[in-house]
Image (cartoon, rainbow, N blue to C red; front, side):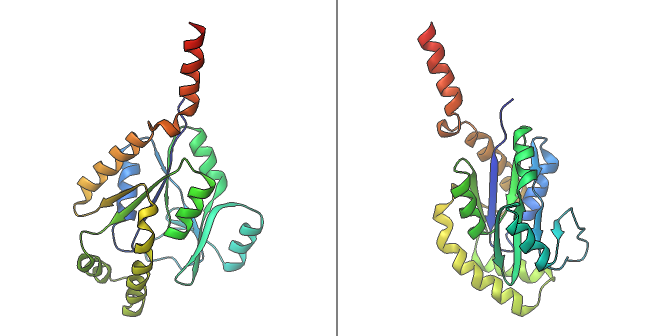
Length: 205
């Protein structure tokens, strides 16, 4: 069985990356969405263990000290991190594990897992990004301004990602995302064991 691919999806707040990943998991059968741990408060309708594992700052810092996270970062005053055990179990089972992580955490994962695929979801324009953030109605003007300022900082690191995806039409972007992931699985750098196997078989002919 072919091992799954670790896929890291980032993007400015408001680009629709969360929606894209939920659709990826529901529309295709070989994806597992990693549930992150966070110290931020749940939004209306969010359930502990589904969207996130909601924990206290003390619980989060205990998990860090036990090396129980693949990565973690502080974003707009809250911790976010990826529990390690779930990721390794799903990859071994042949599932593509999708992580929604901001840019700091994504680059840390690339250091620890060089075979990971990094995707950055972008809006069609900055004006559309602001319109979506305001339209969500879940955050104050102050938080929206913070998110837009954060987007300026994040835009400096996009070139370190493998691919960008422009989310203008959600269904088109979803299909592009799936196609990119399936193609990336066959990159020569991710199939060194198979290449080596063919080499040795050729020598035995």
